[in-house]
Image (cartoon, rainbow, N blue to C red):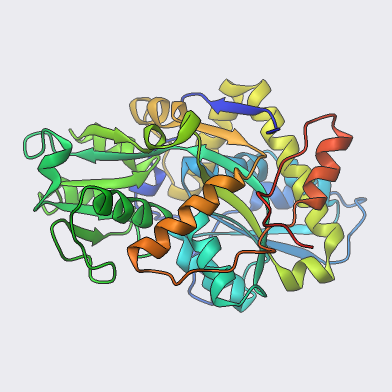
Length: 370
């Protein structure tokens, strides 16, 4: 039985579509160092330090990562960590975050299912574990209404996704395949031109006429709508019960083995954050907007904020059965060989917390550690 979900009503929008001027590159070059002054301020001088001095958390400046945005902004995650300090880093897409996890530049990440699957498969089951869900939905196909009137009109057009092999890229390639059209997964060339474009620059490319549309997460989708695009398809309409995992929480297996107390504390903070978002949707929206302002140097316009937030559900449930389906999509697209996903989930710590909180435990679709 899934854990209670909160519809993220009207949220924090277009940071991914805005220049991240306030960010400085990390030394490793994998992402951008987020401002974590608020998190540092919430480190209690009297707080008990856990088994690690710090925990390095990666996430995207996207509404689909609202748990991280709000949990770090409000200090909810830091509160559970006591004297162990949060260091945060932002990324544009999953593959680069997996590289950072593998390099030890981050310990825990908020990330989509396709990079999770790829990272687990390429490490032969030794690189990471999925330890929680975070969000469902929040992905749309938006198009130039002057060039594209119906879904059939996408043939021959240029449509952006964030990065080759990322969750939206795989979903779009699968959709193309189901239409009976052909596209080379690596190059993006074929009956539809799949253009891999950083979420930060996609709105500019659309505005200049270089793109006909995009299959992207929020807030980029709503940013494009504010530029005149039209929502042609909401991805949730392709899924049973209109639910599919868009954001998981993953952890380096090495970090999980060495610092299980830190991982449990982060999960407690995540569960508490999701509960707070559910109980305080307007305050949560404002908090996430402040977080995105800290990252971009600019607050989000209401006309972007509201529809983006409305389309996302926050959940502790990893919706594991939908990850199985997404793995099949990666194989079908030619981006991945048939993976062995046994052991990709370790939901024991999460279910322990949920049980303590009086919440239903979540399932791993038979893909949990033995």
